[in-house]
Length: 174
Image (cartoon, rainbow, N blue to C red; front, side):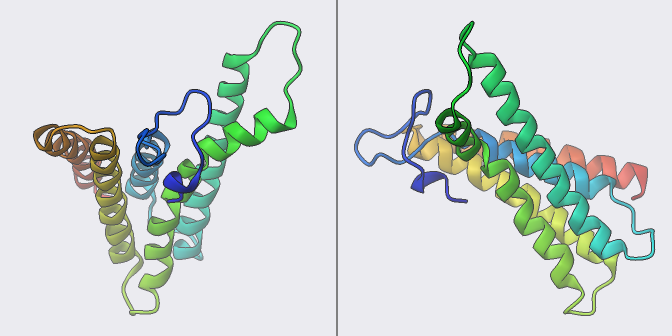
């Protein structure tokens, strides 16, 4: 994710000593979204691996566009037209939602190179999505100056959220 390379803008939280962003909400949200997509993706269809990859990418793009629109509409000042600069700023800020789908999609796609079943590729992608969700939560907390205990607690909360999706996949036998 390129979250730390994006300069802080209005509404972003940044570490004043480094300028690094501490807001990883989009990356966390995108990771749990990717986990949800993978958990509900079946191994059916004529090209199940390709379908899963496309579904992850399209879902990430649709949710990104939705978040951009919601931010623009929510910040709208009466009578003021949106500027391309504002659209780009918000689009860049929310782009981590799309980026979060990249590694799980790659896991599904690359599973074919290792002669794994589609189902195995989906399970690996689910693990990747949950792992990156936990990582982004911990990184955001650490960069925000949270205590080690709070960083660990945030990691466990995000792990519990991810494992809830894993449990749903197991129960629904996808």
